[in-house]
Amino acid sequence: DGGITQSPKYLFRKEGQNVTLSCEQNLNHDAMYWYRQDPGQGLRLIYYSQIVNDFQKGDIAEGYSVSREKKESFPLTVTSAQKNPTAFYLCASSVTSGTGQYFGPGTRLTVT
Amino acid sequence: AQTVTQSQPEMSVQEAETVTLSCTYDTSENNYYLFWYKQPPSRQMILVIRQEAYKQQNATENRFSVNFQKAAKSFSLKISDSQLGDTAMYFCAFRQGGSEKLVFGKGTKLTVNP
Image (cartoon, rainbow over all chains, first blue to last red):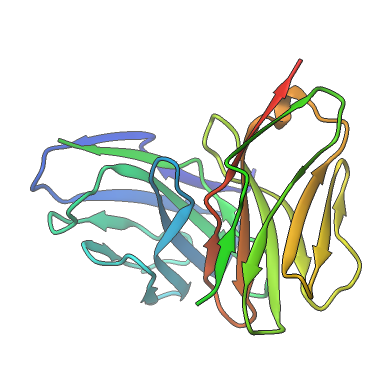
């Protein structure tokens, strides 16, 4: 079955540690995205990538980093510089032609 | 910058009835796309329906349809024959033509009561 996978579903880290969230898709989509969702809020764009080895900052990129070495994979690293990292993180992908974005199941990150 | 406003934080409807969720947006462009996403308690975001701004005909997907009023910058979602499984957060989203960015509203929590 085609789709987007994110792992793990729940992640716990101590403050000051970097953590990497996984996102893999087998939809053959060119574009991939990372969003952050906080309680009572919509989604906010962190980073996106339209092609391998290229990515752009979204609206809240500070404290985050990404890589796009393969078309299928777009991992997100939450660094210790991110002041409020506890949130629900969603990965998405799309064909770059105005179609909708398709989302993975998300990762709930808790930093204490 | 584009903004998306959902003025109804919460709504409820009886099973089998019809409900309409509101969404307005702000843009000065003519080429854009609009979407409704559903987020059930599992938190998986599911694309419900999409509309291209250049199309006058309102999009329909089974029990879901939109009322797209371009001049009024309004994009409401109508759910017919509501089912218990429709209980979820619903997000309206805007995408400028040529841009990869989706701008989301803050969502409407819909509860379908038996």
